[in-house]
Image 1 (cartoon, one colour):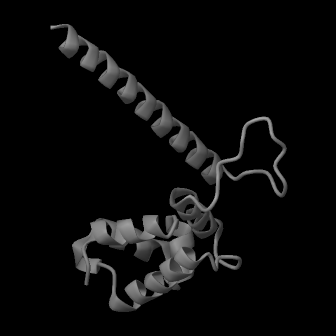
Image 2: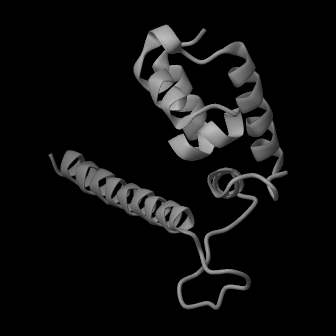
Length: 133
């Protein structure tokens, strides 16, 4: 058995919310909520095996018949590996409109890029101060 934090992390890694996790694991939403709260009713080995299989499919990109959160997680991994790029604003995107998860991924990526740019600018400023002293 695993503790609630491990179960929560496994669900997040698979892009599963409580309702979808219950469906994938074949248990009730009350059971999923209980596993998220209490170490006494922690994730079972069978549930860990199911989540491992889901994760393997997400990692391979074999997600066509998996829930939306799993498909979004697979796309996020492709983005982070550099296999897929973020759509350029203003450029027409082919296919369906982006999901809320995809919009959140783009926003997070842009925030990281902006923070990196600010850190780089601060390093230059700090180097200039050191050189001037």
